[in-house]
Image 1 (cartoon, rainbow, N blue to C red):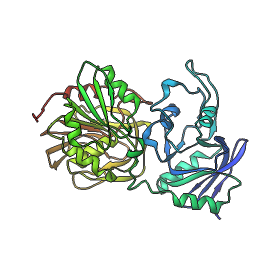
Image 2: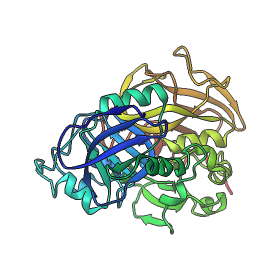
Image 3: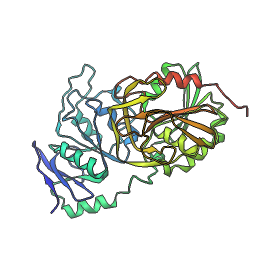
Image 4: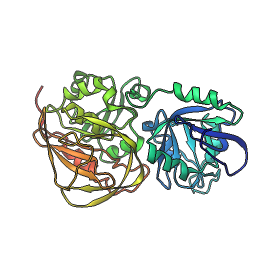
Length: 388
């Protein structure tokens, strides 16, 4: 018999089933009439920002477990959107609220999930679920109505593709280029699922933005004559995006290149580094990262399931020294380090203009400790251009 945790709350009974057979009972909310949903079950440790989380394209293909025990208490609003729709497959909560207590609230959380057709469940022992994922790793799973036989639910979970090797960027990228006016630096982005709060940070610095589909070639990018090439966040496995890596490799050294989250991983792969899948990822707004240049510790917002290997192929970088990699484009130096698990959180290219961070300096949601990095990025614009 599958391990089982009982539910709290009331409403339509349902359950979460993980691919290892572990079951957590609860009560369905949101689109309760839906037949269920499957995806990679992950957890987010943020205390606020539930609307921003589910509309972040980086959550495509995933079901979010919120560790904070009360979700939905201030409502939803237009300004809380990070894209044009919900990308998360489902939501798991301890206790759900449908209140509209924020001054700018335009609706209730549960009503909004229902209207968007998103399956959610509350009354789940999220502490037990998160501890299980931390011990066993993020895994496929699903949210199902109680009347669905567990055998049928298990078949649905097993049919869900693994996140390892998944190319989800094509599912969230725009079909056509998007142009946003500005009088400052021309930033050309490869849109693998960019968040609106990232765009706001560039626009606050008066940048002109051109967002290209993730299938854009190096020639497509250079034809736009960018001052800065930006690699966005996004879902899936960076190792499945060789076509993006090839495009990035074709612009490194010709224009300054910067990346955030998936973009960090793609730039690293373009210069010859390797990535690997983390056991349960980094998702939340309370991750301590050390800037090795200043010694400052920043509390950061993160959302990723993959990371970059160290110079010797290691998953952890011991010590706080700015170690170096030898790459196709010269030296790369570690600039930021995760203090939870010692993983690579950022690097700087020393022989060509480029820099990355694994976390989200735009912080939507999250602390604003790292927003100054956008000033660093824009300062690179126009520096080290190689004439075509």
